[in-house]
Image 1: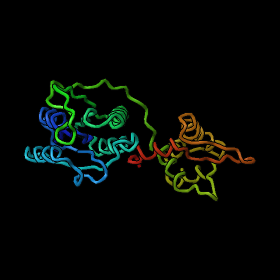
Image 2: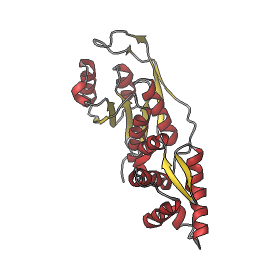
Image 3: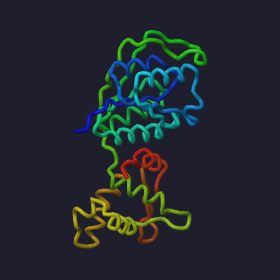
Image 4: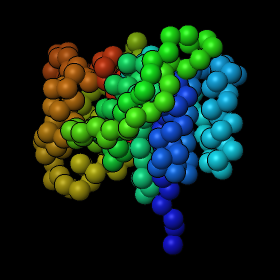
Length: 246
């Protein structure tokens, strides 16, 4: 029988104790360190010391490059790691990176089964080049979770289709989305087994078009008698965040 791992996801900001001590407290088996582009090649001396300490404990260390100032990029990486470890215990440190990394990590936990925690420190230290931002740990607090309804796999598939197929010369129509849904075997279409085209359009509107328009992920434009579907900037960000569902 497969063992359950304790997995920690940690944005690697200017911290040491705030990362190391909760990992040791919970005896994490696997630690994902989210680093800026350049990864291990751009670590400060105390970050390198942190990695050495984690490795010396016998923990499995995995690096994931991410833009810690991009909420959606952090959201994408954390949700992906959570999906890869859906049978494990996943905890996410929302106090070890900057504000946007914290927000992205917290939202990712709301959209998955991961648990967000915040580490309270003993002391703040100002010299980031020579020392970590903080020192010590008083406690790690589990943050309350307010589950949010993430986009469904079918909806992510439609967003991905729009990103791939829409060009300057052609914009997908509802009929294109129906054809794609049937070809790809999307559940909202296949499970309902619609009897005619009218029923297919109704299913598309109810399960994909209306919710994605309401959330601001797509725009629908009337061109003559046709409805053209365009991906918004927010929709592109959401696709990036939840593409792992595909």
